[in-house]
Structure formats: structure tokens, C-alpha cells
Image (cartoon, rainbow, N blue to C red):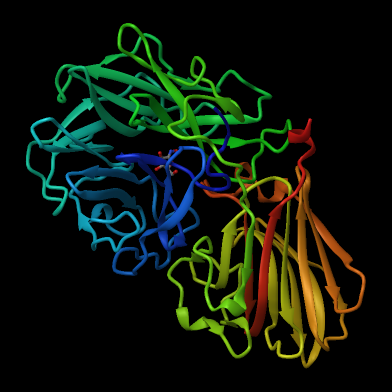
Length: 509
Ligand code: 6LW
């Protein structure tokens, strides 16, 4: 059965997967965004629906002062005897913790903190019911993959800690997961760092404490030698066996928007079938490689994918896919039934201010080629700036907005890249009714337009994808471009947000 990769497009990195009967669940990392750790559900592994977030309370997710790409790093989701567990790291606040819930959509418990440093924690239950923790980390100066028994409900450590492996010689040994099959304990890790050298390796032992021997076919997943291929940086995988005995891997990768080694959509979630060799080693995809269109024995037929988002704010709800930046002040986001709009009460915090929570709501850009538009009221706008942004983080964003300057209304276009913020255009508008602000994106960049009632759409500016690409950020970042609605220093009423994928000439070939 044919399916399309990525199966969860746009910035959805570090996927982890589990299965309960015929239901599959995936979680992803979310860094400075709130709520944290989305939970996706599928029954065919190709189509995924967002059903909620694990961390949707400040008691679970403190992001005060969180740097860009701080906060929540890689999560792991597991299911054991009627309970779901999610374990992850808040690198901004207290480190590794585990939460639990009887239902994947929640509510999830408060964090149980774990006295172990490092990132990318995972859980594994042995046949005798003992639960084991593994992550990378350093104890007494020894760095590697550490394992110990743990109470997954309380986070209490129940055994000595042991460093069981330093991987297979690659740098940045991380994202460990342990599996058991035919009496072997398999330890799978990512190496090479989450850039163009990223790859996945596996080792095995007849004891969870090792010693672990490396797979003779490593790397079991790698696009390191596929320069020029659209899919790059495959790694950070997790394995699952479906109800038919077929094994699958989900993993992160990114798509370059051109032959320049740049990507702006973030690290996305990909799927590939796994086959086990005669001598008991798993190989991901076709000899460790994957494609945008793949054919594999899915547990149920793939359905056509659609990542469009049509949000009518008069309906009195905000789509689950929208995320806040750090911990939001929910009073600034008012669904007003009388106005039939989402009223953003823009605070003094601007989009460019670091480490804070501006009045902004954003959703991952799911494809290179998209059209996004929002409709705002002109006559009630008091905000200094309010509109639509192609938003990577507070250092990198392209904004089109309505601006109330001493009672006069303007449409403005600003680009913020690194430490440069330039208002490219500011054009007076009539301001008597409603206005539509839009972005068209493709494999080159973003084009910004506005249209007042009864007038033609006018192009006000454009920005290149390179300005919002992960490789170009001045600090190491792990996210991707999002489309955001925002308001600064005053109120703005948004009636709708519409995002749709448009034809991509490269995929149409
Ligand atoms: C993730 C780790 C990593 O926890 O980046 O580079 C972190 N590798 O596996 C954030 O995605």
C-alpha cells in the first residue's frame, strides 16, 4: 500500500510510537511552545490525527525564560498494563520526568522527576514486569547510555545505575530505546548529531546490562551518503510491531527546499517498514533509506492526506493545532461570540522579544507550497501591530500586519532576521471594514499580500526561505517555520484563519 512521507509534516521532531491493539500513538518534542508534546493517533500508520497534548498545564510545563529551542526535548511514549507513560526532558526546568494517564488524550499526571541528568529518556518493561529507564547522560564523569530500574509512577530509582554502551563510535549518541525480541535485548541509538550526519545504529545483548555487540549492518538508517536527495538527516528512530507482526520505524528527517543544504519546515516525522535479517537484525526502509512515496504492508489502507486548516473563530473554539509561545496569559486570547471573532489583546511584548510569551498563536507550516490568509476587523483595531507571520522564533520572522498609528491605519511588512529588524513597507489603508492578509509560500520563499473589501489584492513584500531556515539561526535551534497570528500593544479581532497546501511543481512531476 502506497503512503506519503512525512506522515506528520512540518516541525514534528523526535517521534516516539506505541501500539495498543489496533491503535497507534505518536508524540513529538515541542521546545518553547505550549502546550507541550502533541499526541497523534492512527490506525494505518499513514494518516495521523492530533488528539491532544500531554503537557497542558503550567504545573507540568514551566517555560519561564526558556531560550529558543529550550524547553521540551525528545519524548518517549509507552503503554503497559492499562497505563500510558510519557517520559521526556525539560532542559529549561528540572530535567527528566515521567507522567502517566489511562487515556492518551489525557488528562496526564503531574511530573514525577527523575534523579538522572542527560536527555532523551526512554522506558522498557522486561518480561518479569520490571521497568527500566535509559537515556544518555554522565555519572561520575562517565558519559554514555545509562540504564537503571525505575518506578514509572513515581520516578523513584530502584537499582544501581549502569553505563551500558557508548554507542558505535559516532558523536552525539542519543535517542536510546530498548526492545526485546527472541531473547535478545536490542539497544537502538541515534548518532552523528541531528544534522546531515544523523543516522541510526543498533546493538544487542542477552542481558539488559550488556555487554552490547553492534549490528554488523550498521547504520540501519542513514541518508548521510544521499547528498542532493530531498530527504536528509534521518535519525532519532523508534520501532513498533503492528498487530500483523510487521515492524515499523518512525524517525525524524528534513526536506531541503532546494539543492542548498537548507531546510525551513523543521524536522518532520517519517515512517518506514522494518525487516529483520536472517541473523536477527532490523533494517529500516530499503537498506536504511526511505522515500517520499513508499509502498509497504500498512495495517490498514492509507487515506488521502490533507493538512488544510480552516478555522472560523465565530464558532467559539480554537483548533488543537494552534500553539502558544512559552506559558501564555490566556486572558489575552478572547473568543468573543458577540463579535464572532478571536480578539487578541496584544500585550507590550513584541514578537521579537526573547524569552517571553507574546500574544501569538501559531501552527506548523506543513508543506513548501501553501496559501494562508486571515481576516481582521479594521474599525476596531487598536494594536500597534496585528496580523500574520511566517514565524520561526523571536529572532526570525516575516510579518504582515495592520497598524493603528495615532488613529490612522496602515498595512506594514517587516522582516526580522538575526539582529536585523526592518520595516520594508507601510501603506495607508481606508480602514472602514475588514481586511484579508495573506502569505503564499513555495520552495523559494514567502509572498505577502493584503486586500481590503472591494479592492484588488496588493503584494507588499516577500522573504526567502533561507531567512527562516534552521541552518541559518544564530544559536542551535530544533524547530521549524510556523504560520502565526499575533497582536502587539492593543487589540485586534480575527474572524478566520485558513491554511491550505498548494501545488508543488516538484511533487507534480
Ligand atoms: C533531542 C536529541 C537531539 O532531544 O536534539 O540532536 C534534541 N539530537 O535527540 C532535540 O531534538
